[in-house]
Length: 492
Image (cartoon, rainbow, N blue to C red; front, side, top):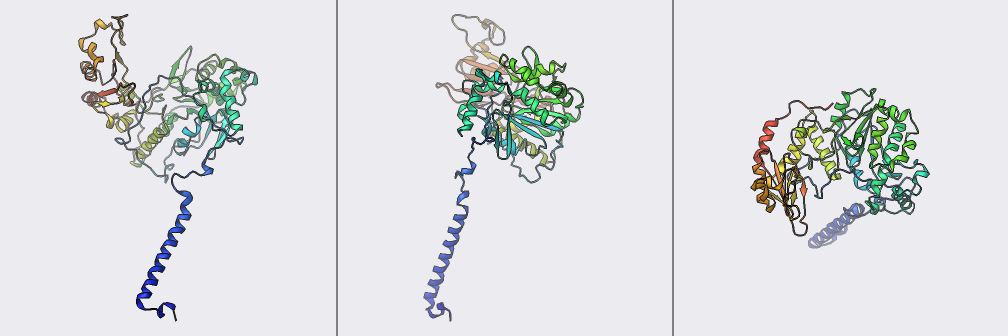
């Protein structure tokens, strides 16, 4: 006979209630023990980066020396929400890429900040790629190659350009985090320029049969579908060196924007000259940038740059100058993106595919998604990067100096001369210029632009605030005139 049948009915109820409570507590405790190690925010030893093992080497790189802004540039997610595609089927519609060999450059001091997002986006579906740094390491199953380990000792010895490189090797041996070494007296930039030729040579040796070599950096976004369409128009057996032009003593492709080299070109440049990097290393110290050395090596074998700007671009959605020359052209690359921005661009691409859009992604698409919804007549603590015309009052020492646009102060209209006095006066100067699309005022500066840029937040400095504004009616009129781009405007 069961024990509970010997008890009064009220006691049996008490026993049943108590037993139920005990069972519930047991279940709760069991589940807490199962999921304790997965509590959000908890640090797991296995998740921490280590740099002591011979493969665990970090990466350091600095950006190309382009014109920079002190503005904190963001894409406002509150007004421009990014779709969140799932992993299911993401690679199903990915363009065939086995004949495109992606060569990505980073550095030990930035690798953990910039590379992980590419494993989930740019490189997620890529068939063939290689990662270069200034220190050998493994990251989440991805191997990074030291691009500088074959630089001759006589080049490294007593060379200040290699101070950071030597520090990185010490940090690796001592299992220290290399990120504090970032931007240490510009040493990252000085070291970075030695990587380019060695990446070119090692990339070729890794895939000597690749029809196309695409060189990008860890803050570069790559639009895969557009790249596939673009390269299908070209013959890799012809010597192509394609990029966004930069000028020093020669014309060369800007490295941060990315550049493309065909099988024929890389064969002529390094395949037929396996000691090319060693030959040119002695000259790298005296030049500003490694991408210029790539241009020189290829020019030495009579391969000139094929210009693909603005499709290959050094800007990003928040800094692009939207106008007729940034409207109907397809986008191949963008530069200076944060990890968040790389993800946002990738999500935008996937959302277009999910909606069945098969046309190339154009600049107009970036404008409509990332920029237009965030434009306002006036926005405080914001810099929209206006810089076509700048008005600043003359000094007592130079009362009639030339203004930014080449005119003397006395030749300016009263509205222009008053423009630096306030944000409202700056807006009126923009109104008075029929081509002005936007303006920005700070302290004694009024700047206007004839293209459309979003820019980003700008904190007050010494109590002085930045105020920006856009001429909404003119922007609407420009969009109507520029049209919807029925046909992509491919360059080359």
